[in-house]
Length: 291
Length: 233
Ligand SMILES: Nc1ncnc2c1ncn2[C@@H]1O[C@H](COP(=O)(O)OP(=O)(O)O)[C@@H](O)[C@H]1O
Ligand SMILES: [Mg+2]
Image (tube, rainbow over all chains, first blue to last red; front, side, top):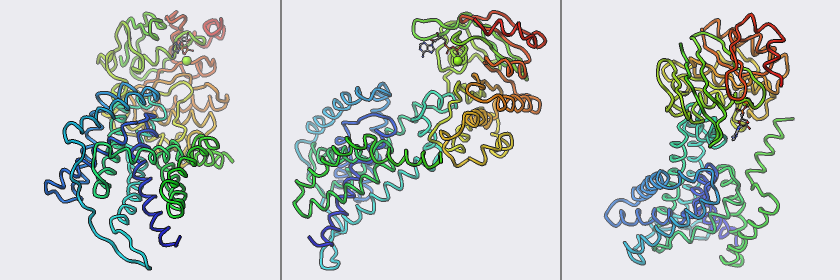
C-alpha cells in the first residue's frame, strides 16, 4: 500500500461519505425526520442531471438543475406529506420508505431499468507516480465546499438562525414571529437539494438506474449515525474519521472490507457514544463554558 | 384599549381550562393576572399568543380581531412574549437569542441591541456565550431583552420571577417600570410573587379555576392580606 494510493482512496472515500450523508444529515439533524427516501432523492438528482446533459445542457449546469429540481420536489413532498409528521420520528421512517418505493417504481415505469449515462469529464493527471482522476479531485473540493455552504446557510443567515431556533423550541420560535412551517419546509427542501446535488455529481461516474440511490444508502446512514445530530460538526468529523478507516481498509483488503469497517464503526459509536461525535463536541463545549 | 378579550374559553383537547375570560387593558398600563399554581394563567397567556386555540369568545388587539390569527402573526403584529421559565434557546448565543426578537412588531423599527444591553449590561459581557450556560436571573433578563428588541406594543410576561433571586426580581421590576415610563409600553404579566405584583401592577385581575374572580386596584393591592387571600389555598 503506497501513500499516494492511500491518499487517492481517501480523497474518493471522504467526498463520497460527505456527499452521501449531507442531505440526510440536514433533514435528520434539523427536523428529526429519518428520510428513507434519501437514496431516491439522490437517484432523482442523477436522472435530472443525466437527462439534461443528454439534451445538450452543459454538465455543470445539469448538476445544478439536479440540485434545484430535487430541492423543489422536496419542498412539495414536505408540504403534502412530511408536514404531517413533524415530531414523529418513527412514523417518518414508514412514510418515507413508502415515498422511496413510489419514486423508485415510478422512475422504473417512466424511464425503464436503465438510462444511457454521460461519461466522466476532465480525464486524469499523473502526480508523484500515480494517476488521479481530475473529476474525483474536483468532487473532493466540492464536498468541502458543500460543508462550507452548509455552514454559511445555517450559521450565517437569518434563515439559519430561525431554523436553529425552531429546531430547539418550535413553540417559542413561533411566538417570536417565526413561521415555523415555512422553516421546516425550507429545511427539508435544502436537505433534498443537497441529495440532488450528490446524485448529479456522481451521475457521470456510475450506471444510471432506478436503484442508483442504494449505493449511497449504507454510507449515508453510517456517516449520520457516527456524526450525531449536528449536521455540520457531525458530518465533517465523521466524514474525516470514517474516510480514514474506509480508505485504509479499501486499499489493503478491498472495498468489501471497507464497508464492513464502516458498519463496525457505526456499531462501536452507537455503543460508546450514542449521541455521535457532535454530541461529544457539544457536551465538551458546554463544560468548558461552565468552568 | 389595546387588548380586549370577550368570553374567551380555551384548554387542552376536551378539557376546558380557561372559562369566560374578559380582560381589558389600556395603552400604557401595567396590569397583572394573579392566581395560584394550576389555575390556568399560562393557558390563558398561550391562548392570547395564539399557541392554543380559542374555543369560544374573541380577542381584540389594537382594534383588530386576532382570534383566528396565527401565533407568528400575532408576534409580528406587536406582541412581545416572555414565556414561563423564560424559554431562551439554550444552544444559541445570547446575541443570537436577542436577534430572534427582531420579527416582533414588524411595523415598528427594532431597538438597537445597544439599548437592550444598556438595560441589561450582563448580557453584553456574555453576548457570545450560549444562553443555556447563563444563570436563572440572566436568562430572565435575556428573555425580556429578546422580547424588547422588536419594540413591541404589548409585553406579556409569564411569571418572570420564577426561579430567580429577590434582588434580581427587584431589578426586573425597576427596568420594566422604567421602560413603561419612558416609552409608554403596555405590560401584562402573570405572577404569584407578592413583591413583584405590588411593585409593578397598576391594576390586577385575580384568577381562580380558570375564571376571573375579581379586579383589584392599586391601593387595594398594597393590602397584604387581600393579596394573600388570592394566592393561597
Ligand atoms: N399541555 C397540557 N396538557 C394538558 N393539560 C395541561 C397542559 N398544561 C397545563 N395543563 C393543565 O391546565 C391547568 C392549568 O395549567 P396552567 O395554565 O399551566 O396553570 P398556571 O399557569 O396558572 O400555573 C392545570 O390543571 C394543568 O394541569
Ligand atoms: Mg404558569
